[in-house]
Length: 360
Image (cartoon, rainbow, N blue to C red; front, top):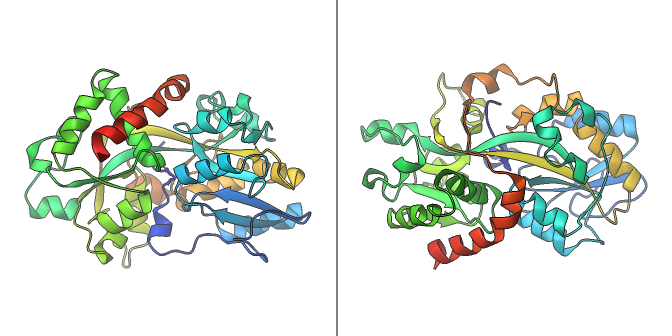
């Protein structure tokens, strides 16, 4: 993989003022479905090319309604609260940091999407057998504002260890681990790096070094971060932000004129690997349409479209990533990872401890 997500997001395009996909011929905010429509519940960073979506609508006969439900963490919480009487038919955007929460709360109706056998093996095992479908992959990493560090004649940080050094005091903004998927991923990255006995001590040092915490990715990246197009407009003053390895290509793609070099960089030793999933919501009004949409999301057409729409890596064999994505994205060779079972067993306690340590 050469970048994101995530995420969720990854999904810098929305933050740059682009219009995210809305329902075609329908009201995207209404929720629910009828026999001729299928509703996708997702996070704010979802996007797809209109031509690709129209192709699905033409071949399937369903109109697609997109209901954006906040940051990934918030969207998952809402899906849990509405389980059995869901807002839509399919949920996209639950990742490996939050998957067990959704599965334990019985949010999804098990379904193996057509074409699941073409998902790359390293992703196929990580949840497909439990009824959800892997859709994309990315890396949550600290991004930095190249101009800020050049002007200050200061080398940007490269690692978790660097972030607690006095020279980077009051420079980092991250997201709340209890409400934000990248925020949680960053905490899990530190837990993977420093272990059960060391991650809390690390966060005490990071707090003492002036880390700022905001609710979600949109606020952190597009308001607080000085290196993004949105952050510049908002007069953001933090040159370090928890975002994605795929954020730099976005800054190039939507700049006019396009620069020869991305204005932001990635601290590659601060990364945590993220995988996003989609699933059929239990109690979906249009189960047949939901299954068709899930099949479509791992089709080559949708997978090829994702990199320059949501700035994530496809998980399907032979899916293509565009040249711009490869050229300006950052390859993370050794991201921090964690077994899904450990995330499931420890996440709630880690979040509780992190909240007590950092927010109180």
